Amino acid sequence: MGEAIGQLLPFAVGVAISPTPIVAMVLMLITPRARANGFVFLLGWLVGVAAAGAICLLIIGPSSTSGDGAPATWTYWLKLVLGLLLIGLAAKEWHGRPAPDAEVPMPKWMSALDGFTAIKAGGLALALSALNPKNLIFIIGGAAAVSQFNLSAGEQVVAWAVFTVISAIGVAAPMVIYLVMGDRAAATLDGLKTWMARNNTAVMAVLLLIIGVKLVGDSIGGLT
Image 1 (cartoon, rainbow, N blue to C red):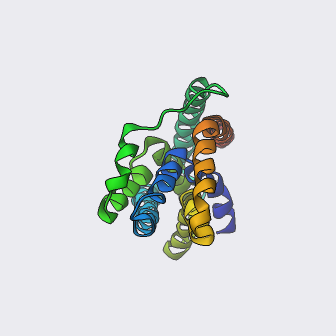
Image 2 (cartoon, rainbow, N blue to C red):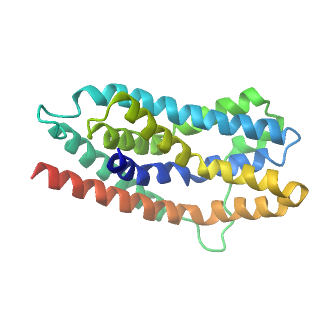
């Protein structure tokens, strides 16, 4: 199981540093319902990643290994497709990165976060975690990494729990800052939001490229 967890870690980190949910969490923490909305958003994120992963494991698991316990050939083709998709996304992210001094516009829906109830916050977290195409690629990749090791159901649950917890580090960090620093957190959170909006495109592009190249390399090695 340790090897499976090692294989899924890059995918979990990819989900964790996605900038949009982190910025959304920061903005929720400066609203009148900060504590309630923040906790529900974090819970919704965990549920979304866990549920998406469980569905992927159910679909991938039964046919991911061959008769001798080795990964099935189609899993390498899946890695190749996912790797190429990530490399394409990396190029897109890098091409679209903002200039160093440019003002980065926020999505229009973020301006409505002030009026969000806890239920809306949870629904937004579910959408950003489980329905975001970039996250889905990472989740599918992580599920494929777990499935190829022919683990028991219990071991798969533990491995995916590790993935889920790591994937939540990004959205949990602002909540921890808010709880620890209290009234002093506003300036720190605002700085985090600005940094994430300005720099995360480049960071994400590099991460997508690294994971994409790794997947392509793994698939070529497995297929040849």
